[in-house]
Amino acid sequence: MTILKKSIFIIFLLNIFISNTNLFAQEVPHSVRNTGVYDFLDELANKQIIEINSAVKPYSRLFISNRLKEADLKRDLLTARQQKELDFYLRDFGKEYQMGKDWKKRLDLLYYRDSLFSLTVNPILGGELFTNSSGKATYWRNGVEAHGYIGKWGFYASLRDNHEDPLLGNPEYRTKRDGGHIKITTDWSDMQGGVTYSWKWGNIGVVKDRVQWGDNYNGANIFGGNNPTFVQLKLKISPVKWFDFNYLHGWLNSMVVDSSNSFWVMNSYGTEYRKVYHKKYVAANMFTFIPLKNLNISFGNSIIYDNENVNPAYLIPIFFYKSVDHSLTSGINNMNSQMFINISSRQIKNVHLYADLFFDELSVSRITRSDEWNFLSYKAGFRLTDLPFSNLSFTTEFTYTYPLTYQHNVPTTTFETANFNLGHYLKDNSREWYVAFDYHPIRAMDLNIFFIDAIRGPDYNELGGTRVGNPPLASIEWHNTTFGLKASYQVINDLYTWFSATSGNIRGDKRWSPEYFYGERNTINFGVTVGF
Image (cartoon, rainbow, N blue to C red; front, side, top):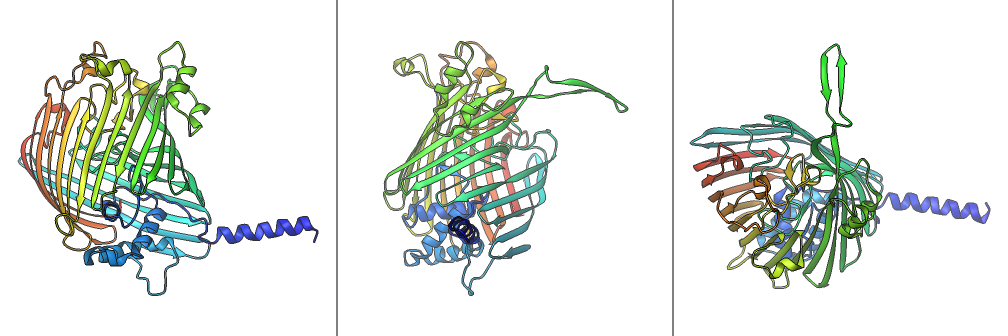
């Protein structure tokens, strides 16, 4: 062979070798609805056993696996319950590595792995029942989910049918229940999944999934994650230990009919007007710096824009999009841009302090004026872990959102997809207090006592008039006070069962809550689910 041929042959062999090892491991996002493992990672981070960037979710299965393996090397710092819980989650996330012969794998419907290819398939099945003075409400789902890897490629898919009667998660409701009722019927399907490609310090993918940005324990206020899933191009890089970068470009559903592209269809079934929606997109980035151990400072920006085609300017991940927009739409109504900052500190052992700011519109001149307010939302809170004794946590969180935040006067550039808000579940002109105790008596069990007091003021976007000078919470138009107890237990991996009892009083504008929960209601809820 010539030197050139030998070089090509060596490169070819190296590529095969790299593709069939974990040197450049693959990435597959893991559902944020699997609250058990996310809460466990948060607990370990608060105890300074591991380090996480909790401002950006979902995590990947590989990230979760790495953090669990890191905790496994520090088992002597864990309580007996935490050690059992660590072993419990390693039965699932140990699949990201070739574990030893004594490894006890979780129960899967189908699991296969060789040196190149792996595949896991599991069912999705579950339901829940609510009962109060309004009667009964039911929800159940069925489907299948799968994930796997081929070399440096990862793939995952989840298809489920949902059935809810009456509907409890419509776009106008102030609730954290998942959005997805696009057809506004009691039955709807949801397809999630995607394909990713990874290298040593990053990954990229095309996925249809949820996005949750902003530290929180009761609803994120940057990207809330309760809206229907949407297709997005995602990029994540971590080239050094002190820096993370996340970017997405998403294709949203405007729900606004484009009359110029809509048309009439005439066939044997009759005459029908074929509606076509205006195109709508979102681009967002988040820069996270770690100047000190257990201190994360994140900032970024996003933009909602409409156009016939994707604008290449918003495919550049590191841009400040508001400035780009000013040059692209000079002299006309600009697109809808946002900025955000998130700070998370776990520098005090067993204490997580966090705060974030979401700017929908910021004018420096309004800061000093008493009769004008910027469009912003802020959240601050803390969680104490293992204080005053092991396996107990205490959380308090405050959220305040000024009028017209998350709102926009152009229907094709609202901070929404399919009419569901992308931000905090209470939307604008609102305030919420959240207080909770969580106790973990045994592995994968959570006993939760919580209190929520949430209010919302006038909807100035609906009322019309000036967009500047609207006083926050000038009157209380909706008020939710709820006290609750919830016990949940993960019997085996991904098999959850729960029971809750809540005493709630929702008053004010009836449009903003399901009729089923409106008024003074003592509600019992129990359910079981396999998969997400």
